[in-house]
Length: 247
Image 1 (cartoon, helix red, strand yellow):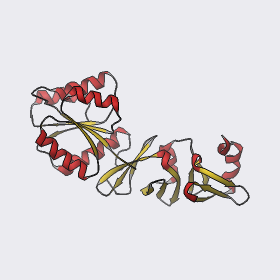
Image 2 (tube, rainbow, N blue to C red):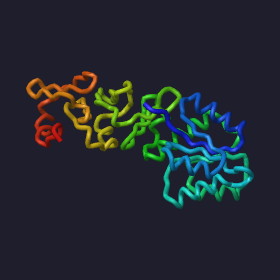
Image 3 (cartoon, one colour):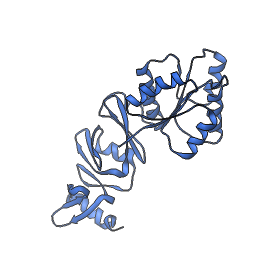
Image 4 (cartoon, one colour):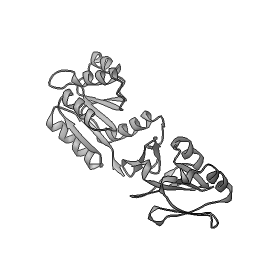
């Protein structure tokens, strides 16, 4: 499990401290910068899941300038603007940089947290998933963004050993812990779309890179940490025919 990493561009230290307090209290990792040059350099050095940009930096619309540069260079990261300026002209200029949202200061902490969740959903094209229930998730090719209490955590798909399904719920058995999400097996296969995950039973999806031992006659698969998963006749033939375990 990883915390979502947020890049915060804010030049007023007191306001930055307020934001850091809210975000870090909800287990988000935050990198704080005070100018657009530093923000751009941070993007070059590490990956971020989300950006929060103040529009006016040192008396200039550097937040908009920074967003325009990213758009020009086709660097796509979900972001939102925070500002105390209530100017239609500024709003129109900011709108063309394609932010997820535009929040006026002073902002409501819960509004900010909900907006971050919605931005993650929108970016990955899976609306109405995180905000409706604590067992929901947004699934991307490399990460799952899972709602856990009031925060969103990021789980690397490669750490999943297997997925067990019980009706409309999936249990994700991962290296660092287990997670429950509300999703059917067919739906998680569709949105996960990862060739490393193969169905071995009507209720199980296995990460083939985690397989340690395979007992054909006993219909049993042993994964890391001694996880034991059934192997049904229905899926065994196709699994072995494709040589998935031996690739």
